[in-house]
Length: 319
Image (cartoon, rainbow, N blue to C red; front, side, top):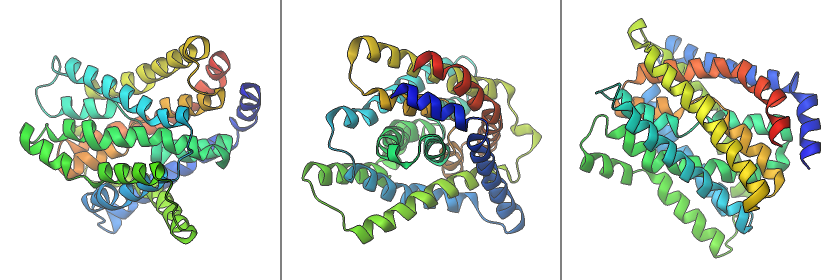
């Protein structure tokens, strides 16, 4: 299986992968133009994603998941890793910032742009046959974003009690529980409804990438924080790949929890740029949205070189 994956990667890394990544930048540009020329509000798009589109994507992903015990562990694995890494950077951040930057750093260190960027990338690399495993993995990040992650960002602007109340109002957590109920009781979703939900997944990816461009409208030079940018890059492009690579090696030789076909998906999700939802949550909560937008854009640009290089050099060593 791993040999087949490496062959696919060799064929696609120089063509489809580059084209796929560049197309995502085009969507970011469209978002910027929409905000600059048409006065589209990033706050409105952020609210649309957080409160309406994301819950539907989560529910459908869980409710239609494969009834496989090891695969079901995928979201739990990524949720645990996201929580541990974000808590670590939250503690580190107190030595460098006294403001909300620490909270945004903690949030964004725990998650990458797995849904808006990672999902299309996985389709480009491996095709749609790996979508169930990919979506389940992404659900772990979404679960983190809408619980621990959202609370951390909210704490940059609200007291603990108020931040917890705002977190409890997020519908995504309840969508996850409802989807889990459907899965456990073996309840099916009608084909026409399932097809409609699939369209929401596309809207989820497109609007999420456009949100990065929207977040750049009105950003000034004061929003550029090299120290903050460096910390986010260390978390996303160094800590996450090391953590996932280490787990894959341990699972291969000791734990034997997951099938080898899941490993490439894990690696891809560990090297995507910073999460667009960093901008969504920062905009919705008014917590340094300018710095968040610059960090997300910079990481997305960096990923254009980083991802193909990582796939070409590190993948053969790990898989």
